[in-house]
Amino acid sequence: MLIPLGTDRPRRRSPVIALGLIGLNVLVFVVMATLERTDPAAHERVLQWGWIWGRDFEPHALITSAFLHADLLHLLGNMLFLWIFGPNIEDKLGKIGFITFYLVAAVASGALHAFFSNYPAIGASGAIAGITGAYLILFPRTTIKCLFFFFMIGIIVIPAWWFIAFSIAWDFLAPAISGRTGVAHLAHIGGYIYGAGVSFILLWTRVLDREPYDLFTTMRQAKRRADLRAAHDWSQREQEKSRRKLERDSVRSAKTDAIAEARAAVSAAIADGDMPKASHAYESLLSKHGAEAALLSRQRHYDLANHLFQTGNHQTAAIAYERFILGYPGDRELAHTKLMLGLISARYLNDPIRAERLIREAMAEGLGPDENAVAEQILQDLGATR
Image (cartoon, rainbow, N blue to C red; front, side, top):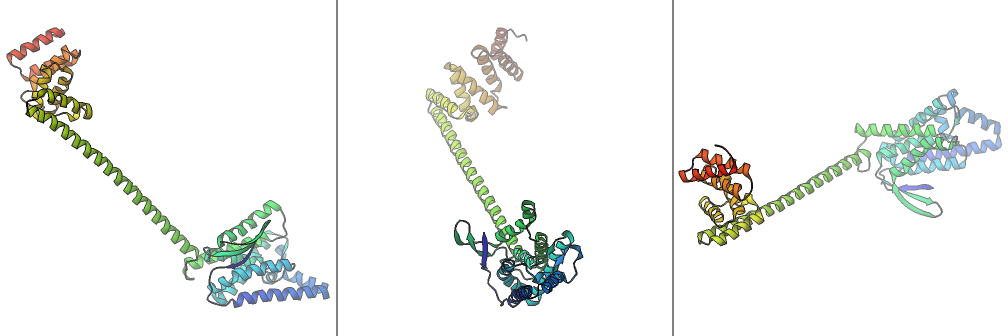
């Protein structure tokens, strides 16, 4: 069980009206208790006149019932909540605004009870529910110091909206869970709706000044925090994208440098006339970086491809000729290169279809007499007709 002891919201005014209402409720209770002992019949008449009784109530009972209490515990519970939450609402609304708000809350909560229930109701609970409903809107970010006891006793501090939300939830759930509880839950619910609704409208229309504790400021700050989180998350994503791009660029740059270095090694060996070394370097270039990276300058590439063929390295020679064809499609040696690649495909790579296509392309692009004779022989060997 939690018993509220105080809130942390500072006040600018003394709670004159809240104290006055507490005093008036206590005075009425004392008078009624005395009357019950001295003149029970008169006590019963006053009670019948003052409480709310279903749809047969008198209009004045919407006010008078808020100052009558069933017993001392009923009075103390209501006055405790009025003392804890009332002063801050009075401080916010002013004296006239607060007493008006309190009395209208009593009327609204009592009217809801009278409309839906035929059971009698008395007490300030509905009006005080209006105050706590207003507190939920005006000061949700404050905290409440509570006396806590459940197998142990202690003082805890909880957010105000937790405490009030639990009270509201109890009024909604208690009838369904416990049936008749002897409590006018409908009056409480009417008070909550009135208090929260009026306070929301007053803040929304800026009739009441907004402050760091209220719902609108809390929502605005929550949105600002959400925007900041979104901006931070976006920044983190962008930084991660930039980091990954830098890594990719770094890898790409390193790969480009490695390819350039490998090509330079092949070209340097060719320039030095060391064709075996050039062949070995070219094979290393193919192995590490693939055929797409294995294109040299036009003359050096052509010379290396012919050397590879002449030394019987037909597999590598085929790759070199193919890269030459793709890299220099308009070269004057294109027909000869296709002839050589066709010859390798026919005699060493067992690819007759590709061989025939390359030979015919070479012949169409123009070969010399000797080369044309070689092409004719290859086609004949393949069993292809002119």
